[in-house]
Image 1: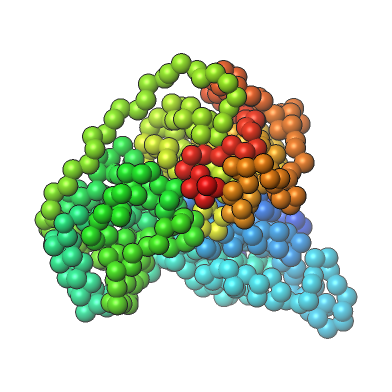
Image 2 (image 1 turned 90 degrees about the vertical axis):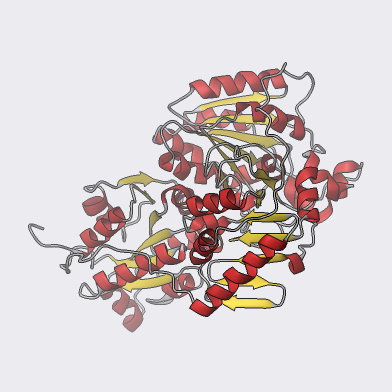
Length: 551
């Protein structure tokens, strides 16, 4: 290639510029030239995944910590397998770049004009493009080297601006063609607030904060997605009032904070948090998403809650459009407001290790025991399962120390997401992952990739033999009676710990707390591969904070 600068190099350079250090890929002949000739020769490490769904989940987990993630797949047969992961990233505002290797212009025209099909074709040149337009912030097709820089820059700028996935269809014959070099660095498009709407919102919220007897801040996931952690902490400090988070935003700020009251998740919240939310006379919700998982069984009082999201403020009958969340938070900080003082219960030191309990492991007993294993260097991940409830009340001291996909809630997410998190986390951090057995069966091949690349998440598979959360959602009373579980919720049980022999990692099966303690100690010493701990729990055992629906 000499001194020529190509489309393939342009894409690599722009991704590296945004901070991408790892690319999750699945081999495919339409994309393999770009990976082999450009990615492999760059500072980006290619992580070869076992399937496209796992690659998508891994890129999502990576992006939640790094601010950008990417996967490379092949046309249709590969890309369509990744749609569920990309849809989840779209819903949860996670900036993932999907690079889809596509057939050449010649192959495309031959198919369209003669009907002679190259492999993976469905119905023409825009099948994949049109599909991904619905679940990305931008979808572009690179079929001209002259337009490639503009289209790539547009897609990547949309990705970092909207914090949502984008789709780049890279034709196989474009990769080595010459194009212009990058000019200015890529930057997210600046927020543009309507001045009148912004000032009105700041004034209205300021008045309510100062006049409220028991004001409360509700920190939502958009504080994390748009990197407003420091500003949110500054506002909380200045106002000197308590704050709660939602499940999706759990631990985006350290839960050791003296003003942190807990996670609000409807009737699954702690009694103290439920009382705090109920008794407050004004709630400022910053970047909160209203979902059925975030307000379990609890009607949100819209009359006393001001919702400030990415670009709007809603409070009662007031609606102010084009108000940037960042501008609003900074504006409230600048007001130097004084709120009525409130006192929170004193933070207690984390529970010291206690004697190992006797008897069989229960869901609640497991989480009571696990709390002792979490310190300031622990990242916790929970799958869409009964683990939502158990993990919700864990105290996580690490800032950005909790990974969950609770809005989209695709079971099976957390195992392969742990691959990406393991590559994105700091070296001194350890990842603990809690998966249901049904979800883990969907994506268990994550152990293969984690073993291949010497990643060391500790994965707890809660083995109760059922799709527990699906049964809970449909009819939770079954857990407190003798009626049978729905047939559709009953699993074929695996011996999960034996998968370690298949994939070359380490595994344990535990039925007692003593065995659990031994397994955790062994897993902590295993630094070069994933550890899978199969935790056998009774089928009718559920976390205490899930009992409200089962009664």
